[in-house]
Image (cartoon, rainbow, N blue to C red):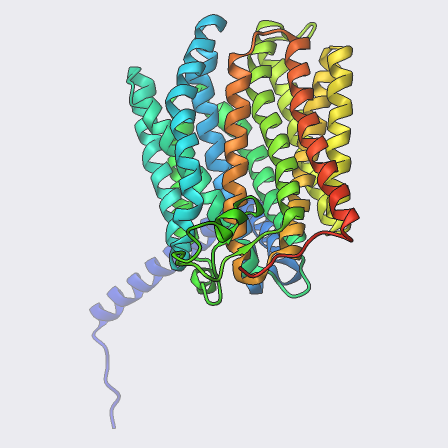
Length: 477
């Protein structure tokens, strides 16, 4: 059979196309290789960093239990919050003279913190009634702050009064997220993981993200005042989607009940006991309530120092330094102390939490008294660092006590209630710090008095527990 022959023209055209295509392919190979190599080189640091972060957050079973996802979500939360903080600090505090700034911050406290003091007691019980929607609640808190960041950006540019209700909304959403996060952690514990260790890892993730995001926010602020808020919008939108990546067991409330503090025990035995609709309530016990009181005094001290030192160092900065640098030194000292306290808490695990709380509060009291008597820039920075250290370590010890003394049935409720009370203490401390005269010795005397009140209460409770043979365990109502 004769073979089919291709027409010469077709062969020529096909051959030409083949040669041309081959030439194009060789050019693509000549230039595509270096382009791909450059792309890989640029992508390698980012992908490598992401892999390292994922390896750290998912270590020791945290990836399988879902705790790693919560650590990443809390890091996103910290980064977004610090972006808004940088923008608000510039708008309310740094953009005007000191006297005017104090009035504006007082107005900010009056419009945002005062309503928050009323709303804070409602946050915990309200979220306690929504155990099946924890992921949605966390996503809602993220998305609300994303929208409010855009509202604040417009208000900051025009000087509109909507800045204050928007800031209040950010505060409420942030604290609502904190309450839900505290309730979620016990549901995500890996095997052989203490609650203290889990909380320390979550807290460290947030601190590291805050440390990275703060200078980025400052750089964006230098470009233009709305840019940190735009950054916060992007971060919180990402957090909205990340919230739903948590395991479904976060929304499970099987076997849970609501908790009352020991101080509320009288309501269980009062005249309305018969009409109570919650017969399964338990108290968290005196050991937890004494620890909560000590933590409240440290959180009150934190709020006080933030606002009081902000104005004191702006009016009287450290020798040879500007106000911004002075505030930065104190802020870094407090952040470093907080990170160190979190790391030490993870190392100590849950050993003698009552003794740890009494000890760290006593150390803070001693430093506060020393800083009052020998007032100076160095001692102020030391007080900020020690206060941050004690606040982190005492909070982890409180977590250990809740894990030890509170039945699992009501443990998540106890976290929600305690977190709400601590936020209220911070608000109270901030209010005292803003109204106090800018006298360093007077201010640190007030700080020492706050710590002394908490320390004496805790020691009295510890001695009472020792006389009765140890911390009382919760009782079924």
